[in-house]
Image 1: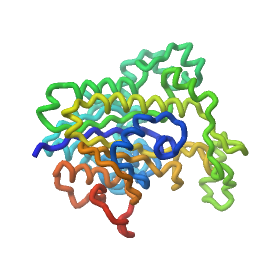
Image 2: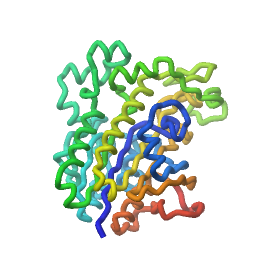
Image 3: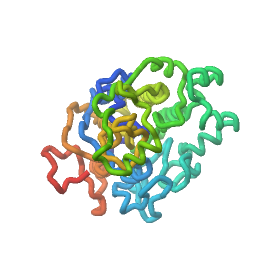
Length: 365
């Protein structure tokens, strides 16, 4: 039997509250929503950490950060820790990772060096992206594009963006004749809608007058909450007033833009590839958006930053929704089961496609 391919797509800072099929908000995530309509949507999927690197460590190693090492950002997993790429490469898969990695212990942008378990011809982390820009463009990307006027004045279009260049490489990978010769695992990892917020100006124009309604959670006075939440709120004041409305056109625009880039990659699958490719989409964590008087992400367990989208489309197009709680930790074991790769005992997760009953107290997330 021919082994299946895997197209694994992830975003950064995109909880369920930023995806239309979960939130019901007019966020223009049609491509993600279409994937959900064609596949299995998990309604209670959670990050294993509401911080970038520990979340990614759990996702790509299959073990929690207290075992693998990255308890916070910019700390790499131990060199003896196997990753998704290693397991699949050892099993005979062509493994390709394109985009944000954030697991090399370096700064936000990475080192530009491809780990040996991934295809170096397609590796494209933040350092690789920056190497294609001029010094002026690097300065713009990091902190100079904060309004419609900035985007217009600097003639920013999709070709400037990291997301577009990631998608270009992903499409190229899928189009290579060699894809028919061996099974592949391709991870496409977007930075959006995380800052720095960069997208074509027409996306930003759509959200000039859009306000996200937070409801009662915007009125939390933090009186009975942990002290670090109060310190967090003091250091990073919420922009949300008594009306409970969150206004951030740049964030919403990049959320919209990355959906279109995701659509480009999914639609690049040939009919033959689609018949044998599992498509998996998720994110690392969310953004508080002023809920509970907090912004950004950090040490809090609110659904705003912990409840992540997770959609899996099978080659057969099975359609259903799953309410059983699942986690990042379950994704690697699930993919290994589908690829008939033996799961090491060290991995605590389960094949979530085989879970039909509610998980007991030992089925932690």
